[in-house]
Length: 192
Image (tube, rainbow, N blue to C red; front, top):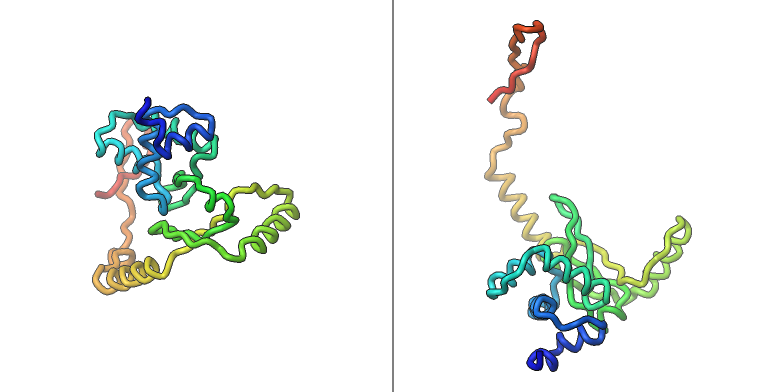
């Protein structure tokens, strides 16, 4: 444990009242290596496996939960096509002081909001009017950055020009039916 004691990650854990376990330190090192991005728990797990760490996904999520509850990490929910996922990032003094950021939905690029005090006050009033309480967590607005928007516009244009549209190209056929001998009920048969 002596080799871990002076590491900045160990100091963060100690300040949060957590023991410096190898699991927690490994997770913090992964997040520290890419501190500007929000990272999914599964991506952290894959990176740990790639680094040769023997660990289970459940252990990673358990450690992430502890680190989040103690303020060592920040957690956000990202909603995508397949549902919501938690993403994590190291908590630092500048992130905690910041009241807001604009984050790209696709690449995760983040820009702090300069006038976030006004935004935060407006959100507090709006929340109060509707019976909500605004927490002191940083406010994050998810958008698509210009680089990703340009890439998705080019991709959509390319797909539009090169991909055949199958939505209306085939007429809909009525389902074939067969008789059930036992009860003479008609059952639909799936067309293949």
